[in-house]
Amino acid sequence: MNQIIQLSILPLGMINCFLIKGNTKHVLVDTGVPSSEAKIIKQLHQHKIKLEDIGLIVISHGHIDHFGSAKRLKDILKVPVLIHDLDKKALETGESMLETLNPNHKIWDVFLKPRLARGKTSPCLPDIVLIGDEEFDLKNYGINGKVIHSPGHTPGSLSVILENGSAIIMDLASSGILLGGIAFNSRVKHPPFHDNLQQLKNSINHILSLNTQTFYLGHGNPISRKLLIKYKERFLE
Ligand SMILES: [Zn+2]
Ligand SMILES: [Zn+2]
Image (cartoon, rainbow, N blue to C red; front, top):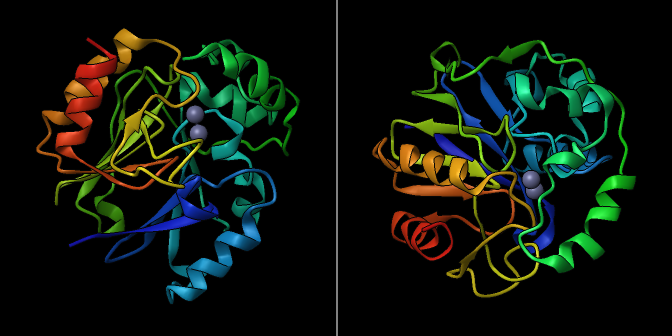
């Protein structure tokens, strides 16, 4: 049984990344905003994870709150970095892809987009690039699961699907209020931006077809299958 550990970049689930424990090696999914590496390493130590047991960094998508510390963590951990072809430009330039920031509410255009536009981090070259709907099997790490292409939030968004029914879907949905889980964790809502709502709906339908039960998010605490279906029905149909 593979276990997912939620690592907090900001408290109360406002920004998360995750570690999947593998029987051979562990996999880190996302790296937080720039300069999050100390915070991540401290929490890994608290969970008794040895850094040398981490074998891969997966970047879920090209927004700076997810790949901000990719270069530093790649240098510290000395492991390959995996991303999808359609989002790799962000990682390689160190800047979010602004053309994918379609606001779900106009206030985000005014308050959040300019901040994301100014955000810059060290460029990081990926080692493994998924093309099209190519999947990446995690069995070499002793993890029963795979990385799949789940576009919609951004063109190259990736999700991790485990055979035990857990899925890391990052920004395909969010929970709680503000950017995360300050309160109302049972409330599911749009994150500030989605690139393409039709693609997003198709991705969520695909993920729901894979026998998934619990969904781990980039912003907010995990949600149930029932809540993800509710999100889809309320916001995407
Ligand atoms: Zn995002
Ligand atoms: Zn995000």
